[in-house]
Image 1 (cartoon, rainbow, N blue to C red):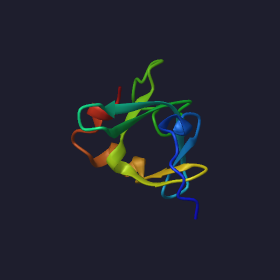
Image 2 (cartoon, rainbow, N blue to C red; image 1 turned 60 degrees about the vertical axis):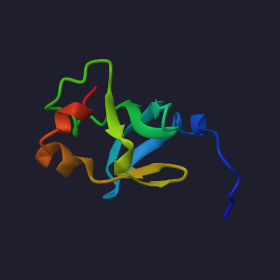
Image 3 (cartoon, rainbow, N blue to C red; image 1 turned 90 degrees about the horizontal axis):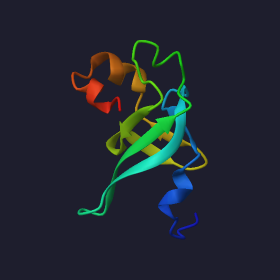
Image 4 (tube, rainbow, N blue to C red; image 1 turned 135 degrees about the vertical axis):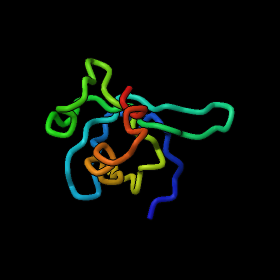
Length: 96
């Protein structure tokens, strides 16, 4: 395993999939908490229209909380966003 530190900008452009293998979108930007020096969200564009058909995302896309991220590699895996959007009471706060 390569433990070489990676620049955070290397995440931009990577595809995001749910842990069930459903394409969610592509990372366009990173939301940072500069005071705490942590990533707290991924701004996604090129969204899967089937997942977000009930949401007016406009041109802005969505911001996925970083706590949903399960793995980062050639692609990024997150918790199953379909269940999250259907059951999470504050899911609309994730829609940017």
